[in-house]
Image (spheres, rainbow, N blue to C red):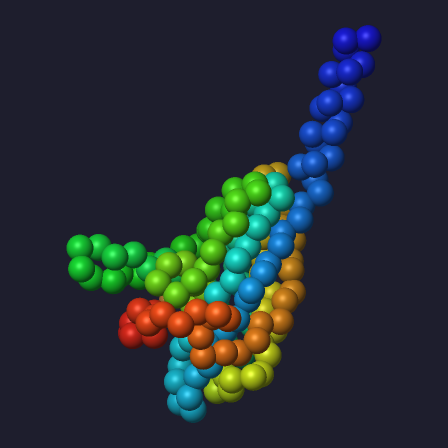
Length: 156
Ligand SMILES: [Cu+2]
């Protein structure tokens, strides 16, 4: 009897691990002017089970990669994050001044009010990859945010 219960519990846990769900909320991408080659995209990502964000693609940019901005002393530094951990149940925020999705080699200007398609690639704890396609509105600032943004000032 005891053994049966244990087996049932394991089956449940296993089911939870395989039902990988990732929620993306409040995504937006910063508008650009003609000739501008880079921009940043921001969003809130919540994974139900431990997951990693391992890549992103968008038809409007030649390169899309996750970056991290960190204040070191009084210098804002940026580095690429090839794999971004998404711990179960924790919302990871990509926002100006922190993690962001860097869009480089832009093929077109991103006009405010437009929409940019984005494909996010995830890898679960078993190494299985999945994709999520979203549409990001183009904006000049985060919805509801009115603060100065350090990301707009950094150069690549
Ligand atoms: Cu960047």
